[in-house]
Length: 93
Image (cartoon, rainbow, N blue to C red; front, side, top):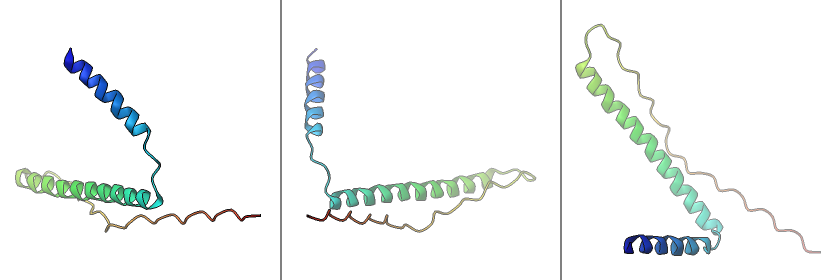
């Protein structure tokens, strides 16, 4: 029972803390976008390496006369996301 109460308290407290966070600055948003892009690229590279490993294993156990496994498609080089230009400030009258 104490664990349930502690879990509920922690959940409500953390939800309140996360709801009160300020919005990201443009620099923080750009850094988050770069981190997200790097993670996505890392996933693509990992999938390519997995495909190569699976093909090597499939080639070892392939019976003569069966088709070769599909070729792996290498991911393109990493390109950092382009930061959007800030919107111009409205002119003062």
